[in-house]
Length: 196
Image (cartoon, rainbow, N blue to C red; front, side, top):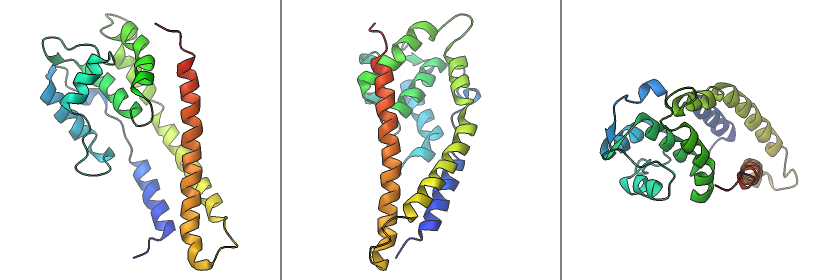
């Protein structure tokens, strides 16, 4: 069975167009026990799993995040809406950043905005960041299409029956280079943060 590269690209673009974040209104306004947090996250982020058996969040992960000061400690074993917001950020960052980098990135946020009585708080910060999502997805889809066209223009000299696989390899390399460069930029920005 061969995969039609154009169908694959269309499937990727359709998948990206359906990406959405957890809305703050979907997060319960009551404090949750750990089991409730893991169930909520698993339900809300189910679509981001690569394989059905993948775990979004486990009790061990949450305990490690608290132990490593990525997550403020729970109050009487209960986690607030703000805890859940931080866990969402951690979930997205952990795919490409080290725990140390995530800690550096979130340290000032939790210090300044976690349980902030007035003004800017974790919820308003979360809303602001994710308000940029729709525009970014449209730009990303256009960029992916351009990278795909570029990749399909490679390996003209290769045997015809090998070109499709080589085009997909080129496409993956272009996407990977983009991720690699952006990860390097993110790490440089994090390294510029003042210590403590």
